[in-house]
Image (cartoon, rainbow, N blue to C red; front, side, top):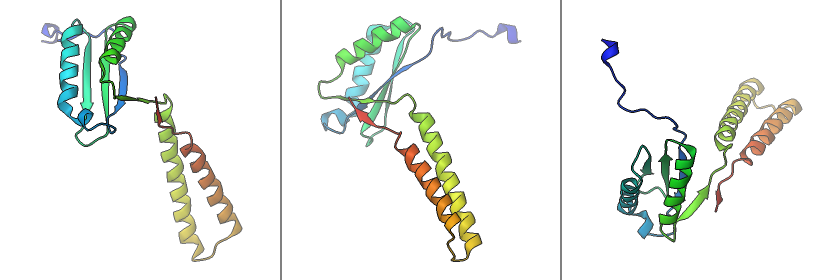
Amino acid sequence: DASALAPSAVFDYRHPRTINIDVSGSIGLQDGRIWKDLVSRLNNQIGMSSFIDLYFVKGDPTLKLVIFASTPAERASITNLVLQNLPENAKLIEQDPNEAKNVKALLVSLKNEAEAFQKHRTMSKGKVSSEMRKEMSSLQASTDGIASTIKRGWV
């Protein structure tokens, strides 16, 4: 009976805030236990319907702290709490909000370039025409231009 089913959780506002951290500069920060303990302590402190999640892979020099909250104000407050409790030598990584769109565009451009290369390779049989050079140059310039929009900056 579907009417007997009740949701186990209700989330009013679930636009998470992600804090990306570079831990490569310190051996001590690369220990996952430090981050698990920090997240556990902060989750116990904030309570309510908010939650901080940790994404950490051993050997990866970056980790993510994802903050879920019921309201934007609550999320902002928890973000400030997290930032105040980060280890002093933790480096925040600035994320470009358009990066995912730019990466997708780069993949499409690379695919177009590879398809044109394959087409010309099978058609030309060793002969390189000026039109072939022009098309490949144009596609390579497009790929290079898109690749230059992908930024990875440090705060």
